[in-house]
Image (cartoon, rainbow, N blue to C red; front, side, top):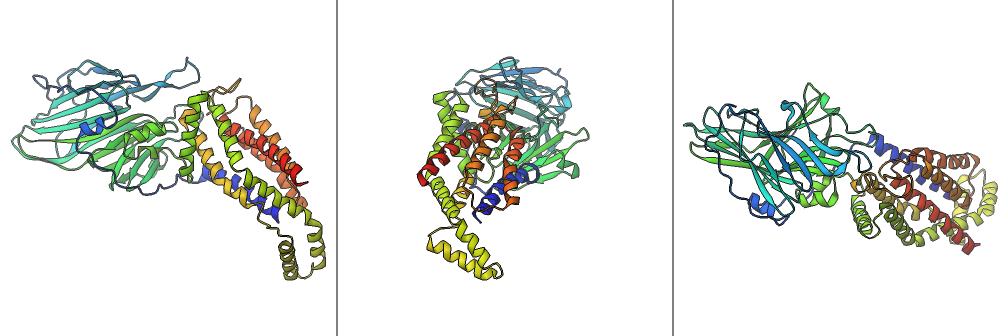
Length: 534
C-alpha cells in the first residue's frame, strides 16, 4: 500500500510537469492592493534613485507643423542601454541592453529588445480619437543626442503643432542608472475651439522569437488589470483582439527573460486594446482618460516606460507590481525567497552552480527529520509484509474482514501506512518552487558552472549530468525498502529513472544540477538511515 502511494506521488510529479508545460495556461494571479498614487512625475522618479534636477526644456522658436521638418534620429545612451528615437512621431526605433547578450561569451551580440527598420513599426507613437493628431508627424527636438552616467537625469523633448493649432510635447526623462523612463505627453489647445478626445500610445511588438530554442520560450502581450495578470499570445489574437479597462497598472510584451512595458502613473491609463495586424505583429493601443481642453489650456497624461530584464529586484523597484511579469507558478511565495537566497549566495561564491548546490544541501538537511521518518515508516511496513501476506491469504474471500485485520495489525505495531508518503508530499511545494525559480530566473541566463557547462539556463550540451542523474535515481530506487510491490508496479517504478532522464535531457542544466545533487544526498541519507534501522 505504501509503495502504491509513493508511486502515485512520483507519477503526479511527472503529470504536473507535462500539464504545466504543455497544457495549463498561465495561472491567474491573486488580487493585490491598489497602487498608491503618486502626485507628480518628479516624486515617482525621485523615489527610485537619487538624480540631479532636470533642467527645464524650452520649446524651439518655431515648432514645425504638418511634418515639414526632416526626420532624424536621436541617440540616448546610459550605463544600461543604448536607445534610438526618431523625430517621426517622437517614437522609439531601437533599444539595446548593454549588460545582456544573445549568446554565451564576450563575443555575443548585445540584446536588442526593440529593433525596427520600418518607420511604421516604431513604438510609442502618439494618436488620439476626437482630436486631429498625426502619429507620423515630424517633430522638432531639443537635442541631437543624450548621454547619461550613473546618478544623472536628463530630458529629451519632442514638439509638434498640428494645422489646427494643437501643440503636442512629448517629454522623455531618463536616469543613468535605471531602465525606467518617464514619458509625459502634453497637449496645448492653440485653436479657437474646445478640443475633446482620448489620447493613445502605440506599442508595436514583433512576432518572431529571438532564438531558435523556443521549447521553454514564451512571447506575447501581458497586462496587469483588475488585480490579475492577463497573457495574450500572438497565436491567440488570431481569434480576435483583446481589450481591458479595469484598474490597469501596466501592459506590455514579454518573452522568457525580457519585458517591454507601459506603466500607469496617477491612474492615467483607462483602456488597453491588443490586436494582431495583417503583418502578424502585435499592436497594443494604450488609451488614457478622456481630454477636454478649452482654448489656451494645456493638459498632460503620464506613463512610465520599462525596457529591460525580468529581474525580480529590478522589476519590483519600478512599482505597479511589475514583478508579477515573472511567472513563478502556484508556489511563488516559496520561489521568491529561494531566488533571493540564490542571489545572496552568489554574492559570496560568485558561481550560481555552487549556490544551487549549497541551497540543495541546506534543504536536504532541513528536511532530514521528515526523510528519516519516511524511511522508518517504510522499514516498519517492510517488516510487516509476511504478516500482511498471511492475513490476505486467510481472508482472501472476505475483503472487509481482511481490511479490518490489516488495520488492527497497523494499530498493534504502531505503523502509519501513510507515514512514508506524507513527508515526501510536504517537500513537493519546495521542489516546484525551486523548479520555477531555476527555470525562469534571468540570473542563470548565460551563468557558467564548471568545465563544459557554460550556461546554467541552457541544456547540458553533452547530456552528461542528465545521464548521471538517471543513474543516481536508479540507485536511489534500488535502495528504497520493498513494501510488497506487485510485479507490474515494480516494472513501472523501474521505468521512472528512464522517463525522468529523457525528460531532463533538454532541461536547464541548473535544474538538472539541483536534481542530481539532491539524488546523491538522498542516496547518502538512505545509506545512513538503513544502517541505523538495521
